[in-house]
Length: 132
Image (tube, rainbow, N blue to C red):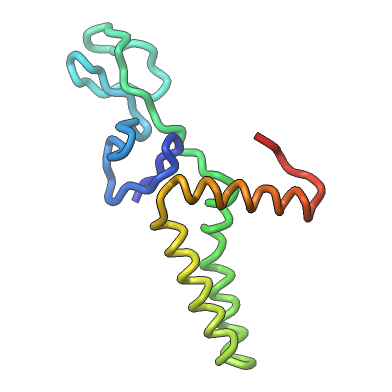
C-alpha cells in the first residue's frame, strides 16, 4: 500500500501512479517516450523532453503519523487488559480499531475537516502548533 502525499489517499498494492490524482511514486515518467527518470530529473534522459510526470511528495501528515503509532498503543492496551481488567480494555481496543479503520476509509473532504478540528484542539490544549 502506498500513500500519496499530494491527494492524501492510500493506494492498494505497489502502483507507479496514484489512482486518484495520477502523480507518480518516487519516479518521473516522460509523457513522450514513457521512460522512467529519477524524481529530481528536470528533463527526460532518453528524449530530452521537459514534460515529465509530477511526483507525490510521499510525506505523511502529523495525524497520519499518529495513526501509524496507534497499533502500538492498542497493543499496549491489550497487554494491560490481559493483566488487569480485560473486559474494559478490550472494548477500548475494539473502539479505537474501528476509529482507525473508519478514518482510513472516509472521503478526503471529511478527513480534512477532522484534521482541522484536531489541529484546533491541539493548538488550544498545547498552546502551540502550526496554522496553515
